[in-house]
Length: 125
Image (cartoon, rainbow, N blue to C red; front, side, top):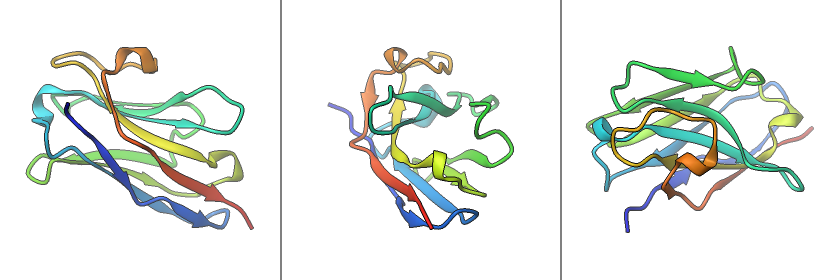
């Protein structure tokens, strides 16, 4: 079973930044679109950002556009989510996920086959 491992979460104050990492060492990133999702207590898991298998396309939820940036390092087999200007509403468990091979980005968690265990991000003063 292919695995993804998230890291980089933590407790920060509003306005600060974090960079999440998704270790996809068992994947060839050229074949998989990788998405970041988040889930706050009592809420459904929702899409945050995605980078396509080609790397040429990135998508963002409206709520994070202009603040978050997704990127990847093919050699390190890692996908990053740079999160700036964090707000209390960004507090959630963040997950990275991979689609089946050669699938496009999607904001639906049902379109993703592989998931990490999640990393907690808490934004609080």
